[in-house]
Length: 481
Image 1 (cartoon, rainbow, N blue to C red):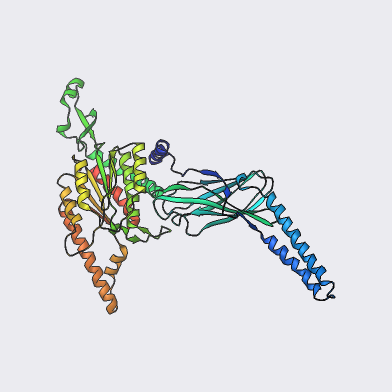
Image 2: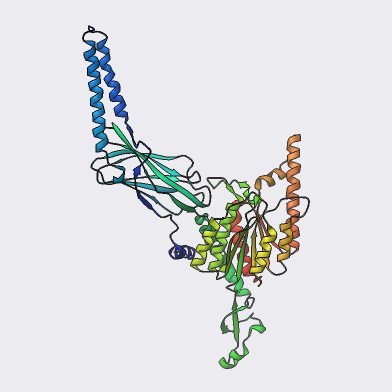
């Protein structure tokens, strides 16, 4: 099992299962009249009208007899309906259970299993409707199922989460009949629960694991060439050609009678703060050919934050979270460990975008109050390309006086592509000019950030998480914190 998988497993065991809990409830009658006539009852009544056909061709004296036979037929059908209704299992004899196949993660299909246990004396054919939210399933979850007497039957159907956070799953409605189909009962089972849709766990784990493996050899080689660049003492070893004189431990050399060098390692237990903007600019929808749904920029930012939190935790650093809109929405102090990683996962799941502009000033004041020592600040945000300098740019530059700042924004490839195209008519020329102005202004602001010591990430959504983790590993490798 990989290190990242171990972290997720430990977090699950410590903080509770990621898969939503199964719920079970006994059904009860639904509606003022919780029964109805089945299709077979209607067909049988229509068959009774056939008695009126010969009544038109016989003597008038015989006509009342045929009409009476039709009445007797209808009475027999009604009596059969009453018997069938009485033989149907009562709603209290039906137990319904809803369970989930896997954790619900954004844009990843999962399945829901509905199980019906029939404790009655007769088999039933049921039409079932599971009351799920539109963010879990666009069309109603309806299906038919046959349940024999004294046993249980189950049916599974897919769901596709489209929003993160807590989503309501409602009741399960049943309309069931016997094999005759004359009578029908209506029932409902109260399986209401709140399920949590998590960020894209698979993408976070896969991207983080790939980056760690791909850079491992390169980083180890670089550390061998740069002994003494770290600030944490690791061990002592015999002096080798190329070691710096300042790293020689003279006391150990005197004891061992040969030159001994101190070996340092990259610092651990440093603070990494993920500052997440959940304002209106992060509501912009971005299409990704590898994703089955269109997601907001904030969704990709959340996935990238989760990848970074996992990698930083594996590196021994402490990770904190500050998500904000007009107010601070989620705040977790810097920490590490399985429980902390689970708390980060839950907090990231609940971050939702707002329609108002984010309060960057509040976020910076809150961050500076909670983190006074030098740390790595990863700011996931965006800005409007206006004629004036956005305040988020000024605040990012202000943070560099005390911290190492990574300013990460998701680019819009369609805008860049429009700026590169050659217009062929007047309409395309105006669109090209507007796109070119926006792109150039954005690049100018990013250049201003780099000149003031802020590291900038401006990349498409598909590679955003990889670029963010790669930048973190570069910062650690260069001992910038």
